[in-house]
Amino acid sequence: MQKSTDSGGNLARLAFNDSDLDRHSEWRGQPATLQALLDRTDARFIGVEGDAVSAVSGSPDYRRPNGLGSDTALFLGSDPGECPWFAYAAPAGAELLQLRPLLMSGALPAAELSRFAQARSLVHWHQSHRFCARCGLPSVMQDGGYRRHCPSCGGDHFPRTDPVVIMAIVHGDHVLLGRQAAWPEKMYSCLAGFMEPGETIEQAVARETFEETGVRVHSVSYVASQPWPFPSSLMIGMRAEAHGLDITIDYNELQDARWFSKADARLMLSRQHPDGLSAASPYAIAHWLIRDICQDAPDQR
Ligand SMILES: [Zn+2]
Image (tube, rainbow, N blue to C red; front, side, top):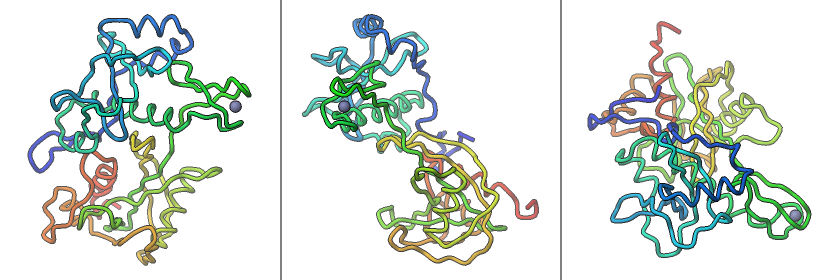
């Protein structure tokens, strides 16, 4: 479920799901191997600053930056041509390309966008975890960027991924969608929320849906997932059935939540709704979750 033709007739895909890098985790514990990869003239480099990647003349800049050493180069993996790829924190003043407009533009091959997701999440983790969470003293990068070690207490820390449940809720011919105040006007999407410790994915779907809309669900099932590097989420796409249509909105979380007919939701996905309503773009998993549910004709349920 990863291809669609958008309103402009372009092929649009779920972003960040198509990495072609072999991560070669077996090399991460071999400093000499990593140094040899870093020294290769065909090595490629992705600079990251916030939600942006380094650029030159408006295009991604994969050239070797000045002064990058094995203590700061994060090894992403090797591409199908065996070129090694690294990520690094872009220096102040570097030309940058913001990731969100880049993914919306559809201008880049899917594999390149997916490399950016890995680079952006990994760089962010190092920038925000420079000190040991156990003893508070500085830690050092190891394993090509996939571990930080604390020389003081011996603690080891590993890159984090934050799981988020995102769900299409259905009841008969209706789909439950919500919107946040910060979103573009008239745009609706799936409910979503961070998973909590000690919780199953199914429990998180039920809890978040109830907290945000007062709707109780059952028959929760997995559909698909998507890395979402803002900064390091994993979107776990789910669907569930609602027990009823009554909604009680938590206005701290949502500006609005409504049941839409599947016909309306389909028009929102294709940006052809008569009231100007829209739903998530094909680059986000929410689009595909809504689309998946709307493909069920009412009489088949
Ligand atoms: Zn420590």
